[in-house]
Image (cartoon, rainbow, N blue to C red):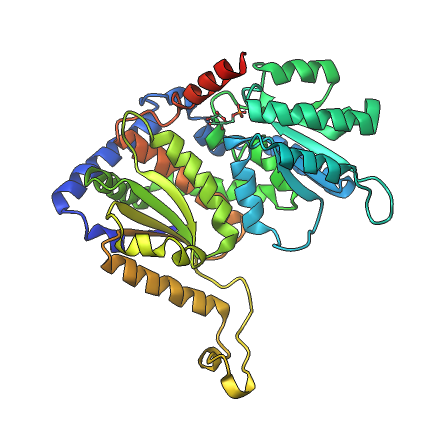
Length: 428
Ligand SMILES: O=P(O)(O)OC[C@H]1O[C@H](O)[C@H](O)[C@@H](O)[C@@H]1O
């Protein structure tokens, strides 16, 4: 179960304001369930959990295994919702160093030429035994026309065609919409394998579709456990969404009170990328019509040594949301040394988990005293099931909170503005 504790934040909000916001949250949940809110044609992220497609999970799982067995390198080519979810889950559940399967690289998520150039060089370099790397490429784009992704795909596709000739179609898997978009033209031409992104699931809500699931499976993570974690959260909140309603109401009341920034912070470096996924999910959903609380991401205690000063004493425009793992997932303890030259023997025998927990408790105390409302979201252990639950927790929270602001959570009209200006400047 995902726990949500608003206790450290609730005291910053008057009862009247909270109960008013709570009413809005209750109505927002009704709108989601009855499909009566704006953008209700985009609620497929709920439907896929209400009626799981086991055959597709099986198919993605076995392709993931096949690629794991064959590939040295697997490239995820996508941007925004087409890579952030996969990266979040993979980083949360994979080893930091070394690899237990193909090396997973990301491309198509920016226009940095040096990065792509160096990637090409790296891909062409032989392995230690002198043989060529076996490379697989998963291009992921619902629209098929996103410039960053399309450009990287063009460059990488050329390399794979040079390396594998006719067989290159074996090495390229496309994840895109059923019929729309330019990628479908290329798929028809070249015969690439294809996975479909349901029309009614927007990019930032798509991690539990083939968009996220194939890369996650290639990383060796059990996608069924992940997916069914989300399914159990779905069932739980269909039954009782009290926690989420409280959190959405509180966030709404904090928004009303004029706070403009929510720092999504974790004390576990494994969860930094999860912050990136939450940032898009909430940010693109709520940031419209002059409304929203800007979601930003921090990893503590690292960033307490850079952003901590501002959070403690800078402009009081902040709230924080801590993402917590309760149980230790490392055994490391502090060793005792003779002479205690570094004065750390007082910690000897204690685990890093305990020290990290004290850092979190100390931060909660200090930031609360600095008038920063803190919400604590926690899972008991870091595993695929709980990450699945957390994914649905934040998807549903986003839907409820953004509807309670009176905003459509499922479009992103503002993103087009930079694209239009860029295309004009490029002479498209
Ligand atoms: O999957 P794609 O169509 O390439 O879209 C990738 C991303 O870019 C867009 O500009 C949107 O703002 C995002 O919501 C989306 O996730």
